[in-house]
Image (tube, rainbow, N blue to C red; front, side, top):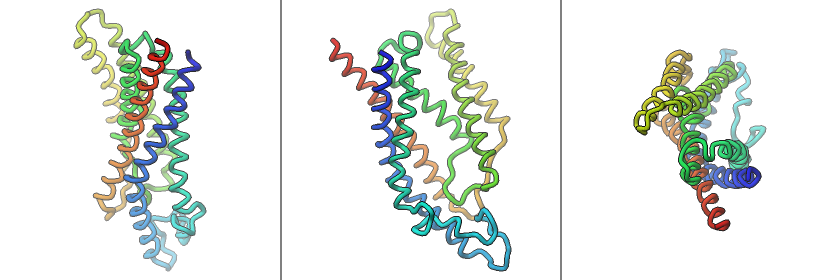
Length: 253
């Protein structure tokens, strides 16, 4: 059964990744192009007397930021690679999800496998996407200091770990409640879930490296598109995984 679930997860993940890639291509690529245009315009207008360019990794090397046809990997290749990246992401997530789903069946969540698949996908979206995003939202090109990328990546990974741990804590706490009322279990689980999340939001350092004058509308649109891509992926994945499970059950029946 685990092998069947794993194959299902891999195939569904690939399909959901391609769907998310299509959304990212339509909703996100125009904002990336706009951000790259701003970055290259700032590099072109940078002083040539040796003063450092705030948008360059090193002073006097604006060519390193060329995202267009002269880049090491041009924009047309990057756009094509978008589907490869989202497809591989979907395959990796699908495999892990299938293994976790196999462990959850009959132990946690709804007894119905389609409902469990949807609930698990929604929980995963909240834990590994929404919680980190609310603290450290995605930024387009030209936003962020290259020297802090390692620190920012580490902080984001910490928030992902906090989200996953918070879900585990909330589920464990809800299962330990002895009363039968569903609302009581939900309340206890919700509180135990929120405590570490809120603590992490408060205690972890903020990251605000948006340069002065960067268009707020472009930043907002890019972040909405980024979050929307993840929402589309997890919604498609949960629905397709549930549908595949229902069809498999019908064939067996």
